[in-house]
Length: 280
Ligand SMILES: C[S@@+](CC[C@H](N)C(=O)[O-])C[C@H]1O[C@@H](n2cnc3c(N)ncnc32)[C@H](O)[C@@H]1O
Image (tube, rainbow, N blue to C red; front, side, top):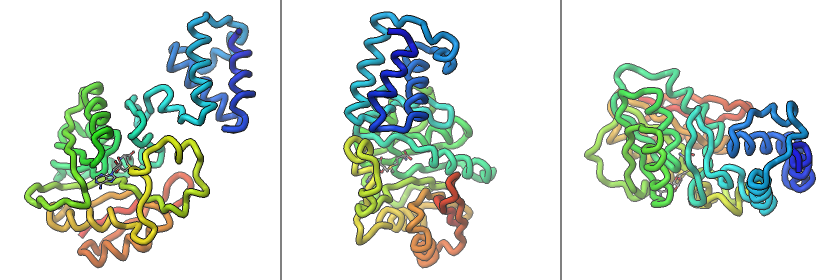
């Protein structure tokens, strides 16, 4: 089979799962990942005849995609802030919105920051991207999931970034002896009632632990993290959260009630209120 025939097989086999532009993009990312080929190779050499091994790799990937497996899990990596991060089942695939959170933190960084916590770290994407940009920061990531922590540690090791990761149930956090200057967090924030509008490949493959909060107490993680911050965060320190746009007003009221009267909201690229910064 030649390259254009293979691309067309992707198009016809995946048309019920993805729009055509996204299929073409997945195909380009696949050939870049497996063979380091340029994204324009399909246009430049459409009649290139694939070797048997090349065809097999692409067809194995296609079969997984047909079953609904997210592309990043199929290839085992996700690109985030110019870092190639390992991901796999049990670990949330980092989202592009979270890159905007990091850009905001870095744009506002002050010289007084020394110690930074990434609470609910998952793949370690926030902690590692911050460390890459600010090698002098002492950064620690926390998560309850052993699977996520193993991936975060592998990512730190693979990228030679010195970030430590600690297993911690944030909701049970009671040791207030540690201090930090900045907390960044993208905790679970999806309401069970939002499942109806979510893609099945997310619902069936990504960890519910990383996504969902109880419908009756959706800010459970934010409340606890703000409480932790009220004792552990230095006086001039701040908290940067990613948040469900449906919960922004409630979150700001919560922060004010718990000693963080100053709240700044930032929109994501889709124009939704997605990030909140708290300071005292
Ligand atoms: C939305 S994901 C964010 C992951 C990563 N920071 C990112 O932005 O892609 C939330 C993370 O919270 C973790 N988590 C869920 N419940 C937790 C708990 N009780 N204590 C600590 N971490 C928890 C999940 O394992 C998951 O990795």
